[in-house]
Length: 461
Ligand code: NAD
Image 1 (cartoon, protein in one colour):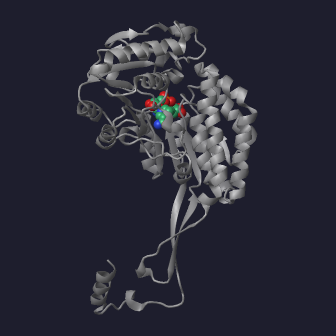
Image 2 (image 1 turned 135 degrees about the vertical axis):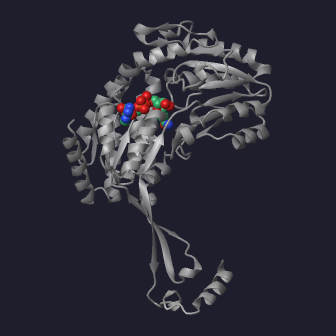
């Protein structure tokens, strides 16, 4: 797309936004209902596109990209009226006879850039927040999930006025062109490397951003963990979408006393889930493309493969794989794996595990398996990460009452539920002063009013 066309698109959207059309709550609810019915009417196409791009099993597509979106949209429809209402807050005594309110104002024209791994969910979820808040939205799907990019853009243009919501297809070039435009908010999901590019562009135009990035999310399994549950929950969270989940357990730290049993149970669980040959399983996805397949095969060189390791480049298949004898220096521990390879390391004391986690950049998620409440507290207070679970993996993403986002290298900002609305709204604080009286203390000439002021602050401060 020529950059003049793109500038024109953004200018048209800004004109539409300035018309005030998107402001009434009734408009927002109507459009959110339309979004829900768009998904309802095209579930099969969405599932097909996800299958074409990633061979996503329909169960995984429905659970993680469709069903969960209905819940997000319905929650916004139900609450947008109260979210948008000005909130009366306390007024300090120095502003005697005044009132204070916080008004929620849409940012204006916002940009959402999405990744390929959950190429529907990660566009719709922020879009719901942006619509509920009353913005106009430009969306850039990932070119790597090309079928979804086409399907998504087609649906958006069929259901929404182009000046209100538009999807622009393309790769890094179109993304860069978009980043050069003046938006009122940018919401980016993807790698940490590109997150830096987005933040640099945002700094140039002083645009507020949310960065939903990745990282190496640890999974710590302690000596007293309920292992039968733990192995299922870890294998599920790791091999869902063939490990291409931003919050998938990246590596396991297992207490040395239970490591052998853990590995045995993991081996059996993988077999129970995907059979003797996971390549034949319809419940196991594929790697998104050749480049990521090659990247993952290079990481297989480290440690000792104890389960899996089988690959088929023609099918972009990599088996669910457990790797033993890995060290922090190995290349598999230098980058986010983002695939079905699970390195296992051990610890003898919890503080060693905490120390290992703290030596790496702050991750997007952390999972801890133990029944000991004091150890659970230790993990929560001595490590820093975006969010996570105790005795489970990845499930926190499905809770609308929990903020979802990273910290440090894994991101800036959070969303889901009420927080998505807050992300795409500016909180405008307004003090309304009474005209009943006018206190003369603050006006010049000040004379010796400073003494009175000091006495006053001694009383109220
Ligand atoms: P990516 O950074 O390669 O691409 C994401 C988007 O950025 C795409 O739309 C792409 O077109 C665009 N892009 C790529 N290069 C660009 C450039 N130079 N300038 C501007 N835009 C550019 O990420 P990805 O490979 O699609 O996603 C994988 C990463 O995303 C992983 O690190 C994963 O952990 C992370 N992720 C995070 C979350 C989250 O919610 N925090 C969710 C999914 C994925």
